[in-house]
Length: 355
Ligand SMILES: O=C(O)CCC(=O)C(=O)O
Ligand SMILES: [Fe+2]
Image (cartoon, rainbow, N blue to C red; front, side):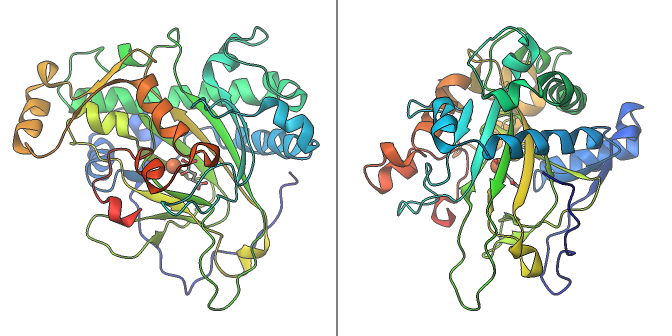
């Protein structure tokens, strides 16, 4: 994708502010910066991250994805995710539902497993289109490595703040164990705004499945539904700032101290709606066999948080792989029987009526 100049995010569209966390200050364990990160992660569960050092690697990932999306559909479908709940590979627009009524999504994406990027040139989990392989060395592997480094730094800080033993979160996210960790590069077609037309949801309301998400976007379209709000709120992209958020696995491990908030993607507002929207995420997810439950025996703080909320269930009774597979499988249009399929795709969100 050429590095296009886009119109600014419109000034007359309301946005939801996020705290800006400086990664360079986190690296030196600046107390005030850690306090800011903690405040964001324990409230909305979303924050901007600046000075993260991954910015120069983002364009290469967009180029890799643009080349991939230009392949004939027949070729792309050879690398499709399938309907069994596997995430790695290509997903065509319309393959997932965006709500309980079964409206189709509008995004196309390519997901590359962390396990494959780190094993390259060996194959760990699956094969990818030649356009991905051609950019493994120069774009994908460096982006994965940098993202792992950033998310591991954040995890280490959360580990300490949660009063967990030194390696509690680390051993649940090792480089060696296979996991659902992956990069996702997403394309949404131009969707020019029409007055009074219903919103065409690109990615339906969801909480992220895993531990931490590290997102890079250029145009608006990401929206959050903060606790207590009735209306979706745009998050404005800021150049050079990633958007980070807590996923379900970390919300569960922490007994709800860290929160995974509902979000969705709609077409960018105003003049931006006339452009293709590209975004890139690195998802850190726990090792496949890790149980998804509050780490109560490892931290009195987590045990107290769970005890304070007896109505909430922080023990899923399943592994990360089982959690992840169930959610992906039930988003797929091909598996849809009715609204119950959508309900089976849900995560930790307690406000299912908003989804
Ligand atoms: O494209 C975006 O801005 C967000 C994507 C997202 O939420 C996801 O893929 O889980
Ligand atoms: Fe998401």
